[in-house]
Amino acid sequence: MEKYVINGGNKLYGSVKVQSAKNSVLPILAATVLADGPVEILNVPQISDVKNMVKILACLGCKTVYDGDNIIIDSTSADCYEIPSALARELRSSVFLLGAVISRFHSAKIAYPGGCDIGLRPVDLHLTGLKRLGVQISEKSGYIICKCDRLRGNEIMLDCPSVGATENIMLAAVKAEGTTVIKNAAREPEIEDLQNFLNKTGAKITGAGSGTIRIDGVKKLCGCEYQPIPDRIEAGTFLIGAAMCGGEITVDGAYPENISSLIHKLTENGCKININNDKIVLENHRTLASVKSIETRPYPGFPTDLQAQYTALCCVCSGHSIITENLFETRFKYVPELRKMGADATVIDRNAFVRGVERLKGATVVACDLRGGAALVLAALAADGSSEVLDISHIDRGYGAFEYKLRMLGADIVRVTV
Ligand code: UD1
Image 1 (spheres, helix red, strand yellow):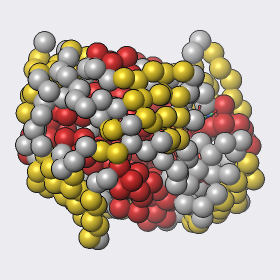
Image 2 (cartoon, protein in one colour):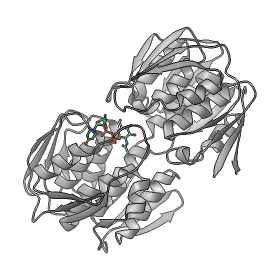
Image 3 (cartoon, rainbow, N blue to C red):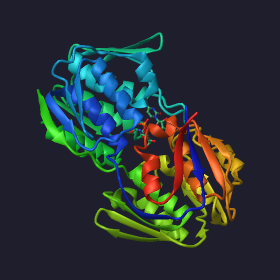
């Protein structure tokens, strides 16, 4: 077990480079199962979710080779359609493999996926979508078992714009007979990135980024080289950190338009933000002003994956804020930990009511999930005195070289093995 030891109070200065988006890389890795030929994915983040996904691909018989930060996957020799339960439980995104594996083998067996414990996280929309393409699905002893003779395109209307269901259906439909149309599709930038990747391998997909995606099935996909989009959540986490600690940082290699909802809020908070192509410069030397209310929404709304970090920021603003979480039921587990640091925050149902305090104070806190863990790190960096953040394996799921990047910005943070 590892923990972070953090001495708070340092302002952040300097430049930080953004990693490739975790939520792009994971479905793209799943998609490599469909390619006849090697796929090279560039600048893959060194995070445990990616390492686990690569392990699953190896178990399916794919050849996987790291070349520095790039990874080459050759699925030509893949010969297994069962996703090992121990790994599937480690990683929510293992469920994306369902669509790809069923397309490749016409059979798939996967344990119910794991991942962050932030709510019920059902997969009913994934399964309903796959059924519409001709997949027969049964469930036995915690496994989802899928079979089909052939996959046929169809129209699929999602009850809500689920990111994972949209991606899974795209992966199952890409080599199906005929045309699939997904309506009420998720519009997250990572969906468009998956479309761009698949099209580079020979797929015929249009519309990703809008609510309607059209997939004309093709017979074959080939290998390619691909650079995924930058991680908007990592970029946002550093921006929030600099806003809370004060200082001036440049987030380099970002797509600012993908986090415009956050940039608007930080400007309202009183931060000075300048955008120059893929560089976002944030400067703050004052106590932040609170925003009255903020709600998480599907893209382009405020991302649920930045909710915890932004709530931590609200804890050091002057004034009150109400933060509403609309996507996941139990995504406020970090709030009692923030209270240990002196935050004045109360959760009722899906709302966190926060009254900003002048300074947080160091404490020992426990990371309960990926983004909640990141929020605790930011709070500790902004706090007076020393903090320990325990159980940081949650943070390692999504932030590559997190403490190294923060140290480069002037933070006093070290990883300690307990
Ligand atoms: C993805 C992201 C995650 C992000 C989330 C929302 C990845 C690897 N993960 O998760 O970081 O927080 O999008 O932006 O890309 N739902 C159902 N039935 C389903 C599927 C989802 O009811 O079959 C509901 C969920 O409970 C939730 C909402 O739909 O309330 C959105 O979930 P979804 O978009 O599917 O999130 P994930 O794909 O799991």
